[in-house]
Length: 320
Image 1 (cartoon, rainbow, N blue to C red):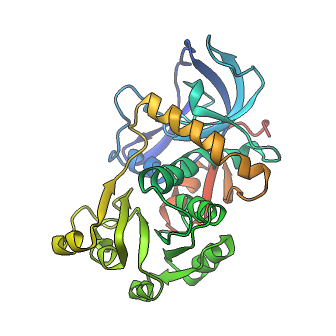
Image 2: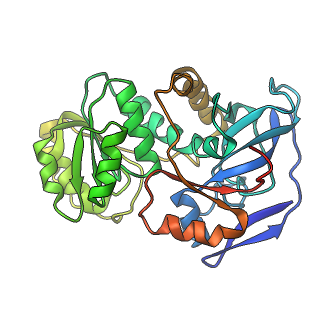
């Protein structure tokens, strides 16, 4: 099969052997794969896959089931999207059957490829780890990102007013159209976020450069969930403030979680989140899809940090 690999900061298509489909797994003929910052890091050699995971790029995909291992309820021909530790940017992928979800009614396979990673990340960190309760206030850094776009919609659906930090006025308008109450842009000053706080939960993919401000913005018993280090790995914290406010700082990753953890997470998504697509309360935010021959353009667009929502790479354009 043809598969995409990262080599010395570049991406290239290569021929790889087709993986075997074992008990409890399904084989998916891939229609499309979502792009994530983890793919940029892996391409640069900075984020190797977890032990045992495929080194092929791609943490989420959509497609059609072509083979079903024993013990799975999926059927050949089912339209699915899947959360992966790697391997999504290939003509086919084999995945734990519990890590796949049905394509929501009315969505294309390209749109479905933009769902698993961002909604799993947003749900895990806001509602499971941070224990977000109805009415609590949320701050989403990088609010126009794929995860931010999903998080805004989830906050709106579950009764949590949210604000964002973004890179431009245009991206702030995009977030407000999705349901954010407002926010601040980096090209002005994030200090204006104080006008909207304090916040009960902050979802933070930035890290270092935002750490001091996060402490100031959090409410009593506030929860700060760190999911990335776009702003650096080092920060100076005021531990007296941590004590006085009883703050909680939680570091969170998803890719290296075990199979059962991901199965439980996807089951939770199936129960609480996936029905909201059929109701029209959640929508994939697919900014652009790229044919496979334009993979370098797709990665350049992702690296520009100017994307609002998600980018998708089309692997098999005959599948809709």
